[in-house]
Image (cartoon, rainbow, N blue to C red; front, side):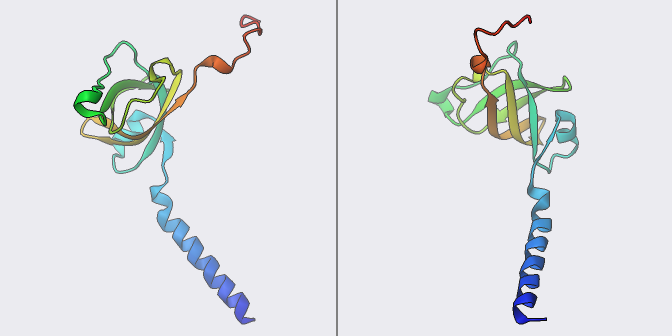
Length: 129
């Protein structure tokens, strides 16, 4: 075997080892119950905003604190606290994806992703068809 082949195999082995050691850090999609049971792992939760519950965001007091209630796709509701600003258009979004982990009785979101409202739906299309 040539030296270049041995070096290539060593590089591949190191890369595979690195991927396996970092695999716990990748977040997966789950629901609030799974996140509650495994609070040390990071998850992406898909759901919708509970508009009947209050949102807490006072940028004059703390611009990096935003609280709201979200219902996941299985119908489980949880309080979500995000250490960041309230995203523009948040109240009009259809679906929300929050990334983070469960901590102290609430979901601590490190990231909030929103699905835009149906502004991309063709207005001429018959909805009842």
